[in-house]
Length: 377
View 1: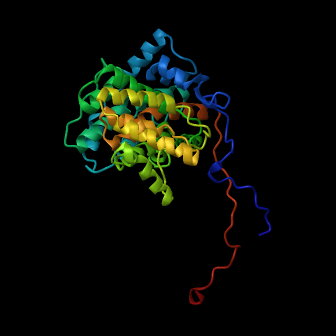
View 2: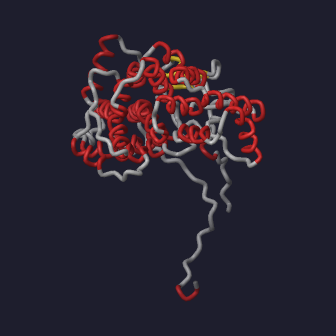
View 3: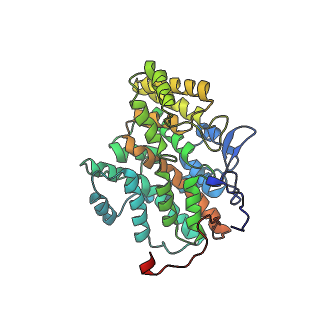
């Protein structure tokens, strides 16, 4: 072919697709920042509600702004009878990620402002999706187990209510704090695969429900959000911490993938891991079961020594959620409930200065040729 081959960057590695003010990994401090604030500091000083407000509005809320934000979220938690009927009819063995993807799409069909893509309408819709997603995740999960859904409780915080709609009870404050921290850490992470997917859909001037539905579809993959589930399945294969190193070396021998390690952005370790590890260890203390964290510590030690590869956020988040009592298939839907905040922030940013995302491909197929007649094929 006469055309000069351009440089192809598989996976768009190193390609800047746009500008953003939402988040950045600061190389000087190896810190993920949301609107300039280090996420590890937000985990200690702010609630998930405050971080959601920050990502959508650019600044942390004052007391009056936070109260109004929380009141709006609480007022929008309930699902319609129509959506509850749909959830009831889902296949009982459907993965919860498929359930929440379909539920968000259904919310788009019944939302009165679906077609309105003005900034104000998009913000109202983002809040409705944010508020209803935990209710939908919990209802689909309970129905799949033959249990009735639990109505949300407006007297509870976002994180407290999540446990309420899943289990029917609110755990100790240490558990709520660990969960809230995980939601902050998962809320946003620059132009990751699902966020870029959501921005691409938004660039067509599609509605926010469509963008978030597409983001959920991308997040399901085990190389993205599904890794926290894969981590826990992996840990359960290891009989005890004492045999973790031997188990891992056998994986090395077979060149098998070890879940929860490595990251496209972080080369010196995921800045979110120390905070999530701290709260996963709190969960181990609360529950009185240190097996998973001890096994994780052995895997991390050997991976660093032998491969110089650090764990990513999914590595401590998986056992943390397991110790909280969540079934493994719920781990990634929990991630969805958090990342809805980040996706929505990017949808709003994309729409504010939109251009259709339409990259090029370099053709390496056959040259143009004639179609042979039937008898000559």
